[in-house]
Length: 195
Figure 1 (cartoon, helix red, strand yellow):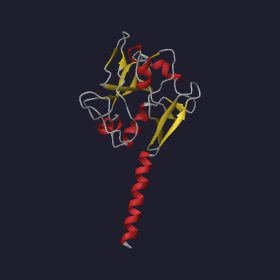
Figure 2 (cartoon, helix red, strand yellow):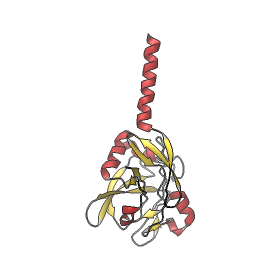
Figure 3 (cartoon, one colour):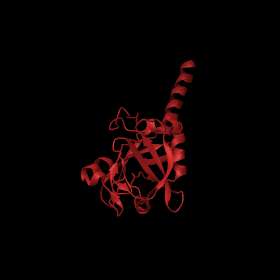
């Protein structure tokens, strides 16, 4: 009887873990044939790589194609409106908040989302859920690039006002994830979430 109960507990824990972590998969973008890793976290399915589709208002870090291969492209906010492929969309601020809750809260989400390599000064994360956030840096308002190795910033679809929109930011020296309002003209990474 005890053995049966223990088996049920183990099966139940495995099911709970699966419901949070889900499973990894892939998706091919029909627009350019690029294949992306995907991951299910809680009830959401996310691209587990930064978007790479070329659009007007998007750039490779330091204008080097090799950086696009590694980090994906950096997009100004208006370019994100149609950047995600059919069946996927730019996440809202609320969808990021749901994601934080699924991994235990925003206070620890940064450590859980960051990749295990690539972050400066031992700022690597656990990549506990397969989100694999790389420190892609950003494109500044003057067109310069900065903070590669130090930050990952992902646009949301939620506007603050006509000049600003929300983004999710991870920083090398911190374990949390933050939602901030930034200028729509900055260049940040994009992660799409499944419809």
